[in-house]
Length: 293
Image: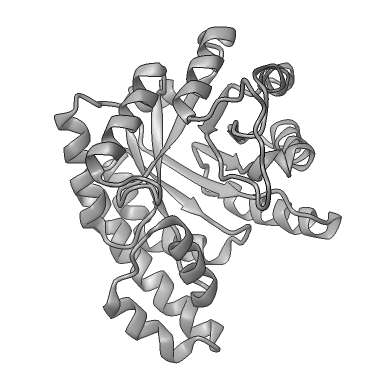
Protein backbone atom coordinates (compact mmCIF):
# COMPACT_ATOMS: atom_id res chain seq x y z
CA UNK A 1 0.00 0.00 0.00
CA UNK A 2 1.19 3.53 -0.77
CA UNK A 3 2.05 5.90 2.09
CA UNK A 4 -0.54 8.47 1.05
CA UNK A 5 -3.28 5.82 1.16
CA UNK A 6 -2.24 4.76 4.66
CA UNK A 7 -2.26 8.34 5.94
CA UNK A 8 -5.66 9.02 4.36
CA UNK A 9 -7.06 6.18 6.46
CA UNK A 10 -5.97 8.06 9.57
CA UNK A 11 -3.36 5.45 10.49
CA UNK A 12 -0.53 6.82 12.64
CA UNK A 13 2.78 6.71 10.74
CA UNK A 14 6.14 5.83 12.30
CA UNK A 15 9.08 6.15 9.92
CA UNK A 16 12.86 6.34 9.77
CA UNK A 17 15.30 8.00 7.39
CA UNK A 18 18.65 6.57 6.29
CA UNK A 19 21.41 7.66 3.92
CA UNK A 20 23.29 5.33 1.53
CA UNK A 21 26.70 4.44 3.06
CA UNK A 22 29.91 4.95 1.11
CA UNK A 23 31.50 1.59 1.97
CA UNK A 24 30.41 -2.07 2.08
CA UNK A 25 31.15 -2.05 5.82
CA UNK A 26 28.90 0.97 6.28
CA UNK A 27 26.15 -0.75 4.32
CA UNK A 28 26.28 -3.79 6.57
CA UNK A 29 26.12 -1.55 9.64
CA UNK A 30 23.11 0.19 8.11
CA UNK A 31 21.30 -3.11 7.60
CA UNK A 32 21.96 -4.04 11.22
CA UNK A 33 20.31 -0.71 12.14
CA UNK A 34 17.39 -1.54 9.86
CA UNK A 35 17.11 -4.98 11.48
CA UNK A 36 16.98 -3.35 14.92
CA UNK A 37 14.35 -0.81 13.88
CA UNK A 38 12.29 -3.33 11.91
CA UNK A 39 11.07 -4.68 15.25
CA UNK A 40 9.15 -1.41 15.72
CA UNK A 41 7.11 -2.19 12.59
CA UNK A 42 7.59 1.17 10.88
CA UNK A 43 5.07 2.40 8.36
CA UNK A 44 7.98 3.08 6.02
CA UNK A 45 11.67 3.90 5.81
CA UNK A 46 13.24 6.41 3.44
CA UNK A 47 16.63 6.58 1.75
CA UNK A 48 18.23 9.89 0.84
CA UNK A 49 19.61 11.00 -2.52
CA UNK A 50 22.74 13.16 -2.69
CA UNK A 51 23.04 16.63 -4.18
CA UNK A 52 23.23 16.46 -7.95
CA UNK A 53 22.52 12.74 -7.93
CA UNK A 54 25.88 12.01 -6.31
CA UNK A 55 24.51 8.90 -4.56
CA UNK A 56 22.29 7.69 -7.40
CA UNK A 57 23.70 4.17 -7.66
CA UNK A 58 24.16 3.71 -3.91
CA UNK A 59 20.65 4.96 -3.19
CA UNK A 60 19.18 2.55 -5.73
CA UNK A 61 21.19 -0.39 -4.36
CA UNK A 62 20.12 0.27 -0.75
CA UNK A 63 16.47 0.83 -1.73
CA UNK A 64 16.42 -2.35 -3.80
CA UNK A 65 17.99 -4.36 -0.99
CA UNK A 66 15.53 -3.08 1.63
CA UNK A 67 12.62 -3.74 -0.72
CA UNK A 68 13.73 -7.25 -1.61
CA UNK A 69 15.23 -8.46 1.67
CA UNK A 70 12.79 -7.02 4.21
CA UNK A 71 9.04 -6.52 4.50
CA UNK A 72 9.45 -2.79 5.17
CA UNK A 73 7.70 -0.30 2.90
CA UNK A 74 10.37 1.88 1.26
CA UNK A 75 10.34 5.47 0.06
CA UNK A 76 13.14 6.77 -2.13
CA UNK A 77 14.25 10.41 -2.08
CA UNK A 78 14.76 12.02 -5.48
CA UNK A 79 16.33 15.40 -6.19
CA UNK A 80 15.81 17.06 -9.55
CA UNK A 81 17.99 20.15 -9.89
CA UNK A 82 20.88 18.40 -11.67
CA UNK A 83 18.87 16.07 -13.93
CA UNK A 84 17.11 16.56 -17.24
CA UNK A 85 13.47 15.51 -17.43
CA UNK A 86 14.41 12.42 -19.40
CA UNK A 87 16.98 11.44 -16.77
CA UNK A 88 14.33 11.88 -14.07
CA UNK A 89 11.91 9.74 -16.06
CA UNK A 90 14.55 7.01 -16.45
CA UNK A 91 15.38 7.03 -12.72
CA UNK A 92 11.71 6.88 -11.72
CA UNK A 93 11.10 4.10 -14.26
CA UNK A 94 13.90 2.10 -12.64
CA UNK A 95 12.24 2.42 -9.23
CA UNK A 96 8.87 1.45 -10.67
CA UNK A 97 10.42 -1.67 -12.20
CA UNK A 98 11.73 -2.66 -8.75
CA UNK A 99 8.26 -2.25 -7.30
CA UNK A 100 8.76 0.97 -5.34
CA UNK A 101 5.50 2.91 -4.88
CA UNK A 102 6.67 5.93 -2.83
CA UNK A 103 8.90 8.91 -3.70
CA UNK A 104 9.97 11.98 -1.72
CA UNK A 105 10.25 14.66 -4.42
CA UNK A 106 12.88 17.30 -3.65
CA UNK A 107 14.60 20.09 -5.50
CA UNK A 108 17.92 19.31 -3.86
CA UNK A 109 20.84 21.54 -2.95
CA UNK A 110 22.96 22.97 -5.70
CA UNK A 111 26.18 20.97 -6.11
CA UNK A 112 29.30 22.69 -4.81
CA UNK A 113 31.39 24.75 -7.22
CA UNK A 114 30.46 25.86 -10.70
CA UNK A 115 27.11 24.41 -11.67
CA UNK A 116 25.03 24.64 -14.82
CA UNK A 117 21.80 22.62 -14.62
CA UNK A 118 20.40 20.96 -17.75
CA UNK A 119 18.25 23.32 -19.82
CA UNK A 120 15.05 21.45 -19.06
CA UNK A 121 15.82 20.61 -15.43
CA UNK A 122 13.07 20.98 -12.85
CA UNK A 123 14.24 23.96 -10.86
CA UNK A 124 11.58 23.62 -8.16
CA UNK A 125 10.21 20.59 -6.35
CA UNK A 126 6.65 21.30 -7.52
CA UNK A 127 7.84 20.83 -11.11
CA UNK A 128 9.25 17.42 -10.16
CA UNK A 129 5.93 16.45 -8.57
CA UNK A 130 4.12 17.53 -11.74
CA UNK A 131 6.51 15.56 -13.94
CA UNK A 132 6.07 12.35 -11.95
CA UNK A 133 2.28 12.74 -11.94
CA UNK A 134 2.23 13.50 -15.67
CA UNK A 135 4.34 10.50 -16.66
CA UNK A 136 3.39 7.91 -14.02
CA UNK A 137 -0.12 8.87 -12.93
CA UNK A 138 -1.04 7.50 -9.52
CA UNK A 139 1.49 4.68 -9.43
CA UNK A 140 3.53 6.58 -6.85
CA UNK A 141 2.53 8.20 -3.62
CA UNK A 142 4.52 11.44 -3.62
CA UNK A 143 5.81 13.09 -0.49
CA UNK A 144 7.47 16.50 -0.30
CA UNK A 145 9.57 18.42 2.20
CA UNK A 146 8.24 21.23 4.34
CA UNK A 147 10.08 23.80 6.42
CA UNK A 148 8.37 24.98 9.62
CA UNK A 149 11.01 27.66 10.11
CA UNK A 150 11.18 28.50 6.42
CA UNK A 151 13.61 27.23 3.78
CA UNK A 152 16.99 29.02 4.02
CA UNK A 153 16.28 30.61 0.63
CA UNK A 154 12.76 31.80 1.52
CA UNK A 155 12.52 35.53 2.36
CA UNK A 156 9.50 35.02 4.62
CA UNK A 157 6.81 32.51 5.60
CA UNK A 158 4.32 33.91 3.10
CA UNK A 159 6.74 32.93 0.34
CA UNK A 160 7.31 29.55 2.04
CA UNK A 161 3.59 28.72 2.14
CA UNK A 162 3.12 29.89 -1.45
CA UNK A 163 5.70 27.43 -2.80
CA UNK A 164 4.62 24.65 -0.47
CA UNK A 165 1.09 24.99 -1.83
CA UNK A 166 2.43 24.68 -5.37
CA UNK A 167 3.84 21.26 -4.44
CA UNK A 168 0.51 20.22 -2.95
CA UNK A 169 -1.48 21.48 -5.93
CA UNK A 170 0.89 19.60 -8.25
CA UNK A 171 -0.10 16.32 -6.63
CA UNK A 172 1.83 15.78 -3.38
CA UNK A 173 0.08 13.36 -0.99
CA UNK A 174 1.90 14.19 2.24
CA UNK A 175 4.87 16.08 3.64
CA UNK A 176 7.73 15.44 6.04
CA UNK A 177 9.17 18.47 7.80
CA UNK A 178 12.77 19.47 8.13
CA UNK A 179 14.03 18.76 11.65
CA UNK A 180 13.04 21.29 14.30
CA UNK A 181 13.61 21.56 18.03
CA UNK A 182 10.86 23.96 19.05
CA UNK A 183 7.37 22.56 18.47
CA UNK A 184 5.87 26.03 18.21
CA UNK A 185 7.32 26.33 14.73
CA UNK A 186 5.47 23.19 13.67
CA UNK A 187 2.15 24.33 15.14
CA UNK A 188 2.45 27.76 13.53
CA UNK A 189 3.36 26.23 10.17
CA UNK A 190 0.39 23.84 10.21
CA UNK A 191 -1.92 26.73 11.09
CA UNK A 192 -0.58 28.78 8.16
CA UNK A 193 -1.09 25.79 5.86
CA UNK A 194 -4.68 25.33 6.99
CA UNK A 195 -5.41 29.00 6.34
CA UNK A 196 -3.96 28.57 2.83
CA UNK A 197 -6.21 25.57 2.11
CA UNK A 198 -3.43 23.00 2.42
CA UNK A 199 -4.81 19.83 3.98
CA UNK A 200 -2.30 17.05 3.33
CA UNK A 201 -0.76 15.26 6.35
CA UNK A 202 2.38 17.05 7.59
CA UNK A 203 4.62 14.61 9.49
CA UNK A 204 7.09 16.14 11.97
CA UNK A 205 10.74 15.30 11.36
CA UNK A 206 12.60 14.51 14.60
CA UNK A 207 16.36 14.24 15.11
CA UNK A 208 17.46 12.97 18.53
CA UNK A 209 20.77 14.69 19.28
CA UNK A 210 23.65 12.26 19.75
CA UNK A 211 26.49 14.45 18.42
CA UNK A 212 25.97 18.10 19.28
CA UNK A 213 28.63 19.51 16.92
CA UNK A 214 27.21 17.53 14.01
CA UNK A 215 23.59 18.49 14.66
CA UNK A 216 24.53 22.13 15.23
CA UNK A 217 26.15 22.11 11.78
CA UNK A 218 23.06 20.50 10.19
CA UNK A 219 20.79 23.01 11.94
CA UNK A 220 22.87 25.92 10.69
CA UNK A 221 22.70 24.64 7.11
CA UNK A 222 18.93 24.15 7.10
CA UNK A 223 17.97 27.14 9.25
CA UNK A 224 16.68 25.16 12.25
CA UNK A 225 16.89 26.97 15.58
CA UNK A 226 18.26 25.06 18.59
CA UNK A 227 16.74 26.58 21.75
CA UNK A 228 19.30 28.31 23.94
CA UNK A 229 18.33 26.27 27.00
CA UNK A 230 19.14 23.09 25.08
CA UNK A 231 22.44 24.51 23.83
CA UNK A 232 23.43 25.39 27.39
CA UNK A 233 22.58 21.89 28.52
CA UNK A 234 24.59 20.21 25.77
CA UNK A 235 27.68 22.42 25.50
CA UNK A 236 29.39 21.16 28.68
CA UNK A 237 29.19 17.60 27.33
CA UNK A 238 30.37 18.15 23.77
CA UNK A 239 33.10 15.53 24.33
CA UNK A 240 30.91 13.20 26.38
CA UNK A 241 28.83 11.06 24.00
CA UNK A 242 27.05 9.17 26.80
CA UNK A 243 25.76 12.33 28.48
CA UNK A 244 24.94 13.90 25.09
CA UNK A 245 22.87 10.83 24.21
CA UNK A 246 21.04 11.02 27.52
CA UNK A 247 20.19 14.71 27.11
CA UNK A 248 19.26 14.26 23.44
CA UNK A 249 16.93 11.34 24.13
CA UNK A 250 15.25 13.14 27.04
CA UNK A 251 14.64 16.22 24.91
CA UNK A 252 13.38 14.27 21.88
CA UNK A 253 11.10 12.24 24.15
CA UNK A 254 9.45 15.37 25.56
CA UNK A 255 9.19 16.86 22.08
CA UNK A 256 7.50 13.74 20.68
CA UNK A 257 5.06 13.34 23.58
CA UNK A 258 3.91 16.93 23.18
CA UNK A 259 3.45 16.44 19.44
CA UNK A 260 1.56 13.18 19.98
CA UNK A 261 -0.74 14.84 22.46
CA UNK A 262 -1.54 17.43 19.78
CA UNK A 263 -2.57 14.66 17.36
CA UNK A 264 0.19 14.69 14.74
CA UNK A 265 -0.29 12.21 11.86
CA UNK A 266 3.05 10.54 12.47
CA UNK A 267 6.69 10.88 13.49
CA UNK A 268 9.66 10.64 11.12
CA UNK A 269 13.05 10.05 12.74
CA UNK A 270 16.31 11.20 11.19
CA UNK A 271 18.45 8.29 12.39
CA UNK A 272 21.87 9.14 10.90
CA UNK A 273 22.01 5.37 10.21
CA UNK A 274 22.07 4.50 13.92
CA UNK A 275 19.33 2.88 15.93
CA UNK A 276 20.18 3.42 19.61
CA UNK A 277 18.75 6.92 20.16
CA UNK A 278 15.61 6.22 18.12
CA UNK A 279 14.99 2.95 19.98
CA UNK A 280 15.37 4.71 23.33
CA UNK A 281 12.98 7.51 22.33
CA UNK A 282 10.47 5.01 20.98
CA UNK A 283 10.57 3.01 24.20
CA UNK A 284 9.72 6.21 26.09
CA UNK A 285 6.80 7.20 23.84
CA UNK A 286 5.33 3.87 22.70
CA UNK A 287 2.35 4.05 25.06
CA UNK A 288 1.45 7.46 23.58
CA UNK A 289 1.73 6.06 20.06
CA UNK A 290 -0.62 3.20 20.90
CA UNK A 291 -3.09 5.69 22.33
CA UNK A 292 -2.87 7.92 19.27
CA UNK A 293 -2.66 5.16 16.69
